[in-house]
Image 1: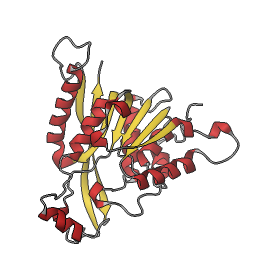
Image 2 (image 1 turned 180 degrees about the vertical axis):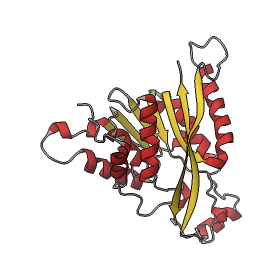
Image 3 (image 1 turned 90 degrees about the vertical axis):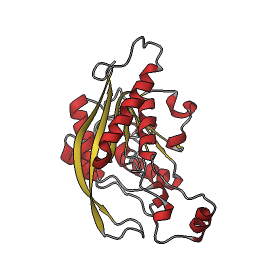
Image 4 (image 1 turned 30 degrees about the horizontal axis):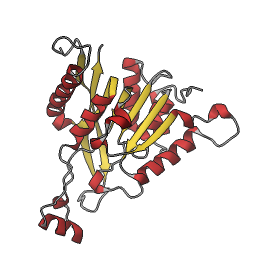
Length: 270
């Protein structure tokens, strides 16, 4: 049976998402930060009001799903099917537990068991193959990607293994991973993409989004002319939000940091 919406307004959605358990031991190499309930609620509810999305007829893909806050929100708003992808098995275990707790109460009423309406996939979003996710197109893609600011060379609590890797020229960095997530989302969507980014990076992010849209549409069989933004697709900065990011890792010097973020919206118009 289709998932019935569990919330009727933004306040109910925010209250629900604030209850979702988050990372117990976040991994800095994957830039694991929880999406705050108020940010996720504002993001998803506003998107639903603008586009009438997250309906029982629609499929949703969450890239980098983590503990499942965005998946929870999409299901709570009535999405018919949601697939979450993450590289971290511990995050997927927590996500599965969270979704089962919220959407499968464990009683004998089959109508309340909506576990068939969501799936979890362990994969590196930046290396998704066509056979995994891109073989089907999702109506909506949501992603809160890593910001691309991790570098083990920056960490003040460097481990022996990190020192050895750097000596061997193997220092790791997440630079550009936010764009990789966005491009994967655009490739996998036939309708809408919503992606969260640092506000300061938005001009560059929007430029790369337009390039990805043009590549996607130029590869379509039914395209006979150049793609035109506004006719074939739109790329918009639809919201600017602020939230306090609490100290999550040893290399964080402040107890909290005020972060300015924006929502990028990509819509395919035909």
